[in-house]
Image 1 (cartoon, rainbow, N blue to C red):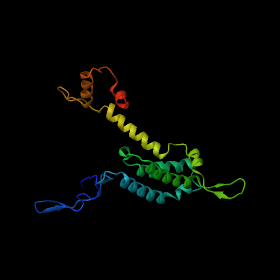
Image 2: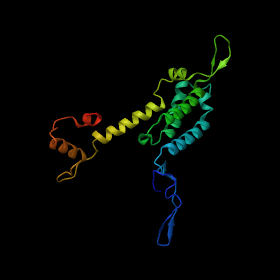
Image 3: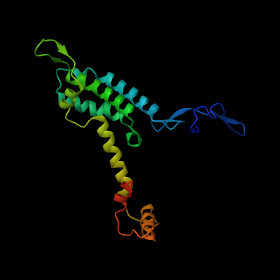
Image 4: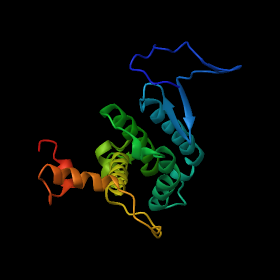
Length: 202
């Protein structure tokens, strides 16, 4: 797979070496994640929601069972369905369209869990509104969970410390060491480089 800005560039050409030919693909799955030649998250979100929908249908009877409490149903959702949908979400780049698709899916599951509500005036059953679902669902919504995982992953890259003992000998220069040396060269030694990097206008 080759990535281009132009979706049609090089699409029809395969790669040949010796007597073998490798088909050029527009997308393929690697370690459970769908990679696309346009470097778009659209196909991955579509695949994740499809898998999550299959999980939902496999346990939907449990999510509306009168034998289980709402807390148990929510745990089933977060453990089984949510884990499938959010696999690899730490690398996602969310757009408003993606957020809407994720919220629509989550609200569908929550409506199954909490069921309809009887109107006090008319006595008729109606679906819960999104705001009512948010009030009933005390845990963080799907978009907040994704954001939290992305931040935790970023924090691990910036300030995380690997486990285990360091080998004997002089340690290799780290990326963080280069940043500190560069700051010293430009007369900004002693500043918190992480805070500095977060301020895009400095």
